[in-house]
Length: 123
Image 1 (cartoon, rainbow, N blue to C red):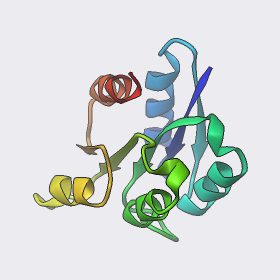
Image 2 (cartoon, rainbow, N blue to C red):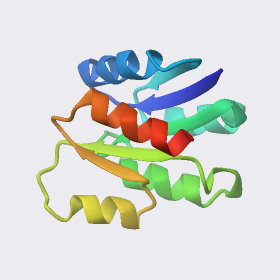
Image 3 (cartoon, rainbow, N blue to C red):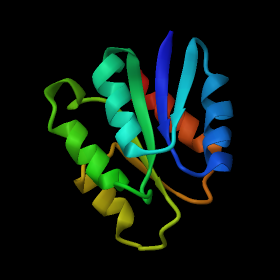
């Protein structure tokens, strides 16, 4: 069983992603509402996390900061990370990859497209 960590403060977006990912074989999800909660979960049981999907804009920290902190730890250097944002900045996809994300999706996004990309990264 592999676990996908979803870090999203919008309940509707989190549920949509959870439904899309849990339809993948032998996959379960953990939904957390903040990057700080994600850091705690990763540090306490991070070996069970197969991938991270995070929103960019959240209250305490943003997704860029979360990715930076993860990439600084050797055990998360290759963890697949997908970044999602409702921001309309045309440079954002490029910035997301430069910050260490493996893929970027703009809101509104296709949950099926996010799932397909996640499946590719997990292979």
